[in-house]
Amino acid sequence: MERINILDTTKHAGEKVKVCGWVHTRRDHGKIIFIDLRDRSGLLQVVFGDETFKMAQELRSEWVISIEGTINKRPEKMINPNLKTGTVEMVAEKLEILNKAETPPFSVDTDGYEIGEDNRLKYRYIDIRRERMKDNLVLRHKVIQFIRNFLSDNAFVEIETPILTKSTPEGARDYVVPSRLSHGKFYALPQSPQQYKQLLMVAGMEKYFQIARCFRDEDSRGDRQPEFTQLDVEISFPTQEEILSLMEKLYTELVKEIMPEKHITQTPFPRLTYEEVMKKYNSDKPDLRKNKEDKNELAFAFVVDFPAFEWKETEKRWDAVHHPFTRTQNKRNLKEKEFIDEMKKNPDKFLAHQYDFVCNGYEIGGGSIREHNPRILQAVFEVMGNAKEDIKEKFGHILEAFEYGVPPHGGIATGIDRFVMILKNEPSIREVIAFPKTGDGRDLMMNSPSTIDKQQLKELGIKFGK
Image (tube, rainbow, N blue to C red; front, side, top):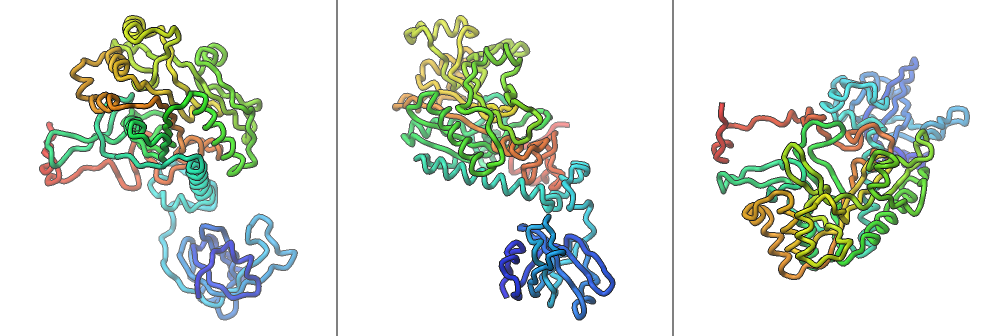
């Protein structure tokens, strides 16, 4: 007999079926034993009596079992309105114990907030069994599936870009990977697919997207993760408004389809300047909800016209506010040489074609129109304090590519983890990631980072000092 999902038992009243799952709870009532059997789809009450009573006596929480039996409709007074299968129950006829389980370190029939997070992360495979965590991961799947379908229907092509890449300064430290075949040289894990997606525009792909994994070796800081997931988008020949309108349409339709109980404060989404929000809200990610206690309110907005450069006092140099590939605004229509000279002389006087996407007081995305003129891009790197030989070493590949016919292009990246967190009103992105790290980057379940053996170090040509 083939197994059916627990939720489907409501369609099989009066029939004999087979279900499999975990023992969620067990209740003894004299000569009858009730258990709630759990699989991903839900819970089912199973009754053991007469011939099957003895076989159920040894069952314990979280044992994995298979049961065959008849699905009966519950009497009207016995219907459980809190259960999706509350109109039926199974009368067990055959029981098979597939695997016994140790007593779990914590209960999975609560929302889990009362349990220490370190314990939950160490036993994450048990923590995910709770309904809240399962629902979070299912919602995450639905959000990503909707994004993929929406962009595919709008002529975008999903393209994977490399995970082993080159170390380049993009605002955070890189995770580096030593090369076994080239001692003393290293790959880096991508902070984002930024350069690759721009090179795809040079390659003529025109509309690209990717559900991309990104890696940043940042100091322990609040709700950040060493690795995270973003929607990455790049378009050739766009205006800034075209990109913002695309995101507005995507997120409006996503919310309507996936979480219709949510309501959006204002459409079209407001376009606010950086200067405006800093003066009015003292924040570049303002919370524009009308009622901040309303858990179903989503207040989206775009913040535009950021400064192009900011002064790094500790490093005594200028840095790009977004990243160096962002196009600097040329409001006075200066000729190329005049524009470069003025930018080098007064970098603080220029705005950027940069925009952030915010929701409920969080930054959920950011992007820009890119600088496609290789001479201006070279000048931006120089404004940031890079020597010409360093620019050639770090960015020569993209500057060379831009000499072969690069279209104007721009894009945006939005955070999947953070947006799902907002949709579910969760306190942390760790609640919507299957296997997250701690705040200081440790995986308590796998016990990583960890040491590697001396032979591996020898193969990599690595020695540690005392």
